[in-house]
Amino acid sequence: MLFQKINQNLMRKIIILILLIVAFIQVKAQEMLGIVNSNYAGSVGSIINPSSIVNSKLYMDINLITADIFAENNYLYIHKEDYKLFDYLKREPQFPSYGKDNQAFDHYTDNKIKHAFSNIRIIGPSAMIVNGNHAFALTTGVRTMVTLRRMPYEIANFSYEGLNYPSQFNINYKDYDFSLTSMAWGEIGLTYAYIFKKVYNNQWSAGITVKKLFSYGGAYMNINNIDYLVLNDSTVDIKNLDAEVGLSLPVDYTNNDFPDDGKFFKGGGFGLDLGITYQKKARGYSNRKYNKLCRQPYEDYVYRIGVSILDIGGVKFKENAEKHVYDNVSTYWEEIDTLTYNNIHDLSQTISNQFYGDPNASLIADEISISLPTTLSLQIDYCYNKNWYINTTFFYPLELGKTYLQRPPQISVTPRFEKRQYEFAIPISLYNLKQPRIGLSARIYFLTVGTDKLGGFFGFSDFTGMDIYFSVKFNFHKGFCFGGRRFLPCQNNEYR
Image (tube, rainbow, N blue to C red):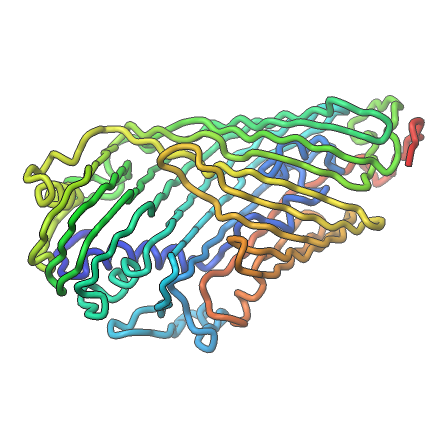
């Protein structure tokens, strides 16, 4: 059984499990900085700016699979001298152990607010086609995301050490505005991009992606305010709690059977990406007609600037959904270390009874909503020599909704060299606008492999996360038809 009798480690078992999952997924990535900004990104480029596909060096591409998987946190870690990635990949790996309970991770004991983020994105069979000023893309994919925001350090410590942590006894903690949100979903997206203005060597394009969302499950916990003391390893005095918990999971809440007997998809919704791009072309554009898509000309740029808003929308869950609210309640909870429960309903009813004196009082609704990780992005790309580019990309999360997933803010500078046959890039970024990292990616024909955190493979610092991404896609280049013959149309509007 998944949920069995527990003692004073109740909070620890719940939260530490989430942190472990977030911190130690063995393949991890976030923004695929070595792929999405490339002029050969094709349909994959639409995930950072849907207007990019019409400006591609490709007239068509077919994506078989692109995987983007990431995890990072600032609480759990493996000491750099203990981290040996390739030893862990052996048939019988030997992991380090820390603390009195031989945990797989040590923990930082500073007083900083704790964050964790995990993102897995797999783009399945997808395709793009460009015809002059118009471009279309159809994408499929699955995504899972876990975001832990602003967890107070003492709660993280209780979750790791258990309530038997005397250095934090009899301290009146007053915490607010922290949350844990997770969701797994699939999406089918249709992208349209259009070059709406060309004047001399100036070009503007706009794009939109509409996505249908199908969610396998989601859950959240929002703590607006908690005022409490831990008196000893068995007594907690909660003076005030203002919180909301929602869940819609593929689990039978009465017996913990997984999966449950209900519908496979617990929720659905829509998402939207919007983008616009300006390009300063190196030369004017061609008006020459072409009779084959492969003969479309491509004019390079001096620089381009793109702005996009990604992941507008969300999912509403109506299947197996529960919303629990604890509206400024309080309790003096003795013998919390003897608390037992056998299933999810057992737990929720016990907590409700403790705060309200009624096992069903906290349950107020049978549907929940979770917003997508809405993000503002700015992309600047400069061609400083033939085939050599340098890119700056900025991501900043937007809070649209009460319950939402959130991408961490990030800024990056990525020099890259790109040709038809191969390409490489070196992303240099500030994750969370604080943590510097350097990556590396390379493409040879149809295969791209990269990481935005190269140091995660070599133990240069404590292990708090690592990442890797790859893409397998077939590119069809503008100006190149089958047989390898290059078509170079005359330029009749050339300006510099």
